[in-house]
Image (cartoon, rainbow, N blue to C red):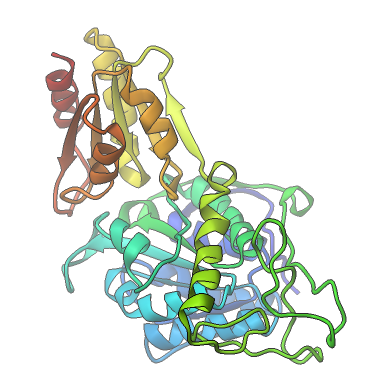
Length: 383
């Protein structure tokens, strides 16, 4: 049987690194429908999963793909799918099902320009708010965004671990450029890759409640279908047994817990990277491929005498609002750089709360930002 962890130094694009990161994280089930620019993820998994004893299924559409990975998770497998904007839209109802049933899985969205069919082969970053609010009702999203093929591999491992830890779907917000650019990717030894295992039921079948929460508000354990536990998994509002209880009291108890298990643990989930922030007076905020020209813009601005820094969102959701609020009281302003017409920019503006300037450098997609355009916005805020 082939290795699930291809230890060594490789030259691969982000989509291939995504697939290899998933396998290294223990993924053994993939259901999906091919769509540019994520298709290489499916192609790689279709070859590699059978080599490591896993299952690959090409579904009839993205609705079925999302349903399949939820079912596979309850069957005991670490599961994932990959798509792009139109497919991600189709998945939203079943993402909500994954949230209310607290089903761990990973959904990769390799973003392209939209809306509708848009730019199938060119970059976009306009699915950020859909990731947070795309499915109906109240829930908290966890979404990660890599800026390189190497980070894509690493983030896939973390995404699977977060999904197990917090018992919900986790979104990986890639973009077309990261998905298709090829760079060096170093894959560590298998023993060095940390896997968070599924929490097993702490009680025998007769005493175990499917959704009894622990102190961290996460259910105490998740059985595998067929082990003898009573499993009732429903999208209806349900009690700790998993049985439907369609009333306001149960709704408040369930949804409050779903929300609070993330909100009360934000500090252990949020990850950002800071560049030259010690004395920064103008702060760039960016993520994914857009953060790379931002890093160059920081250096150019510094050469021109502007104290500029960068906050790169590795975790997009939950948003790093605590850090933005801290900085708002002492910096001249924030410049948000993203390939859309203002999504994370709205979060930055909200958290800045009028204490400093906020500016968006955005466009509709098709290419990455020009460094000089970013520097010009930094200069305008610095004046």
